[in-house]
Each structure stands twice: as C-alpha cells, then as structure tokens.
Amino acid sequence: MTNLRLALSWYLAAVFTLVFGLTLLIHSSFMEEASTPLASSYQAYRALPSVTPDANCQIVTVGKSDGRALLIQRFFEGYNAPLAKYADTFVEVADRYHLDYRLLPAISMQESNGGKRIPKNSNNPFGYGIYGSKILRFTSFDQAIAAVGQGLRQNYIDRGLKTPSQIMTKYTPPSIPIGGPWAKGVSGFMEELI
Image (spheres, rainbow, N blue to C red):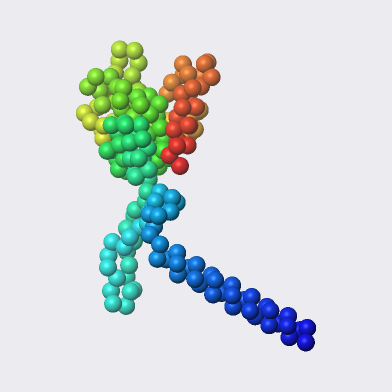
C-alpha cells in the first residue's frame, strides 16, 4: 500500500509539473517581447541564406554576415565619433590584413577620439605618420583605414609586434617611459568592443 501511495504521489507530482511548465511556456509565448527589460535590449545577429533553397532544400548558400560592423558603429556612436559610418570599412580592412577587428578602431579612439581631433585636412584619425610638423595625409577616412591597416600588418604584426604594448614600442615610443598610457588606452578601447 505504501508503494502504491508513493507511486501515485510521484505520478501526480510529475503531471502537475508538466502542466505547470506547459502553462508557463504558453503564457510566456504570448507576452510581448518589449515588456521585459532583457528582451528590449537583446538583439540577435545571424547569417541568412543568400540563395533560396530549391524544393528539396538541397542547396543553401549562407552569406557571410556578423555583428562586428554593428559593434564598431555603435561603439563610435557612443562617443559621438565621426568614424561610426566607416564601420564596414574597418571590418573589411581587418579581414583583408588578418587584423583583430578591434585594433584600428581602438587606435583611432586613443589617437583622435574616433576622428574628432585630427590635423586639418589630414583624414588621419590614427596619428599614423605624424611627427611634429610632419603629417601624413589621406584623401578620405576609407583610404586612411586601408593604409594604416596595411601598415600595421606589414610593419608591426609581421615583425612580431602584435599586442598594443608591443606595437607601442614602435608606434609611440614616448609613451613607454611614462607607464605606457597609449597601450593601456588602446587595450581598454579594444575591451569595449567585445
């Protein structure tokens, strides 16, 4: 008799749990997404098929899509920086030269607040090739991003200078004796882009 009661109790508890769980699931599916704080700030990023599958669903080509450009855009927008509209260029150049996609945006923030403080008519938000009165000028921010990306790959990363601290030794050596604020700043901005 005790075994029968125990089995019956377990069965009733299982049925109750199942009904309760299904009720919560159904109720939550009808709630508006915006009514919860988490849902209102959550966004999903995904790659979508660029080709519609045939009737047998045998061919699906998935297009390359990720959230890096949007992260960069929002990062710059958070600082009201003019480089926000060049987010796609930053990602394209990072991919072309096999760079961490966060490196160029972080350097531009450290050097010019994302393009806010640059030498007049230079389009150089990186401080790249600027020594005293010598100013390396570019025709556009797009050209600057591409040129500095290539320069970082060839003259720094390919020569073993990969981290902000290592890059600083050649990019801005005067920062070293004062504790490396350049590398700390670049690293901090890179962390914001995760």
